[in-house]
Length: 533
Image (cartoon, rainbow, N blue to C red):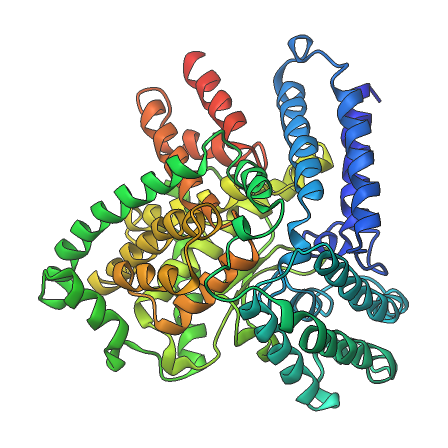
């Protein structure tokens, strides 16, 4: 084994040892009995190890590497650099939330879906009380340093814990795989301690809705710059990203008018948005209708793949409903990669179908399943000739950029069922363009929560509930939401640049078949592919 392979393998081992829940999500074996350690001490140890690996990598001259080895060097360099910076910033300690990055949501969504033996699952359950207690310790340590969470996230995390604890024990999601008294005797009491600490010690000092951005946290402004770099894998700054978002939103308002005229008979953008948001006839009636819509979209997309992609032997994809304990404050849906005998899954939120717009869920399906995340991630996992750290990496800008690109690609593929669904595609574009404005607005320019909500309401067709959930997600996960549109814009740019030399199937293969990539590495890869033809 040469030095580069050894460093990549060691990074891979240490990365998933530090985040065994993510290992379960991506199907990486060997961590089924473990839970993460969210403490500062663990973060400091992990950062020191990444720094050591980065120092060793610096001694390998990339000029002497060719092919996939050169790509591996560039990817590993980015992973080690960004990993150190994010760990040093410690944004997790002020990101109290009921959303997907919060500890209770992580446990409910990932632990029951994990693989492993019953004894490993029981060992993981037995460690969950320490996991929740460590989170409490990290939050309190941050508060002692004057680094406070946003009150909106604290209140929602309390409500989420109350809803979980109020649920009947026999229907606890953690008991799906294994009947055990550990949940009642240890896990639930730990959730009570977690919940009471939030209410009694963090809520009284939490930041109000006028000060939700990281710029209001000591060290937060610098931390946000690091998150922007890590999430976009570019050198773009918040000001440039903010301007890009404003320009995109203006152009998308023109498309709202055009498509609104065809779908709704009005070209007035405000009227279009009000109709999409408030017309009750455009809502679902049942959870079964939601599941049927996304399942049909997935299957039709799979049938259309051969004209647009090379043939890949990958795991299947299914549709699964989100657990009620997670759903109320969660996103419209997300993707769970395959693992062992588990297929990939588009996990869809069916909570309150009467609040969920019919026109949104086709675009959602194309983003999360095929040709979006499932095709992308299952293909990467199938590339057993690549180093494990590349197959199971995830770069937000590449991954989410591809998902957003897939929404528009689906229209080229003829997959949308009508003009109303295409209008939903435009709404989703506007939603991601607004993210560039409101994420930087809150965390860099100091916008209030209400200003962010008002901006999104004025420029998207998302429901009020979805807008509020989205803004609260950006508050808890600064920078991540920028990845979608920044990544999509780069993929579009590269497609145009390579149009004369790569057909569409070859271009898509270059974007996906090398596994997850930072945008700068993807740029170099496409440039090399076009210049050599």
